[in-house]
Length: 119
Image: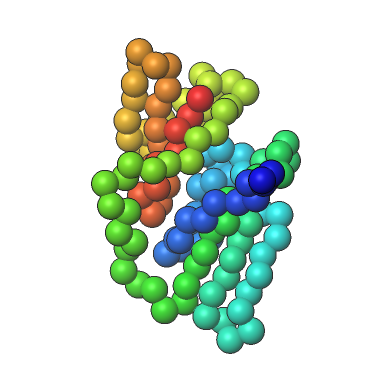
């Protein structure tokens, strides 16, 4: 069987805060959205303009409690063109949450606690 990865999903509490974070931190921008007619949810798809893979941010109107992310053993990974420049932005944002210097990578954390690996 042949398949193609289309998107992965993160549920978020504050959609605009998340959109701002992903654009500034890793350059992902909104490519489309779907809004429920009754306003109960918004699905916002972010892309990198290089691949077809997207990050779907799901906002649920009635959700007020933070999401349980378990032991944070899952993450999204992105490759950046200029790691030093990206790191400077992430340091300014105060979102670096873990670094493995031996492996040459670090993680940032989004407003809802999701980890993003920077390569």
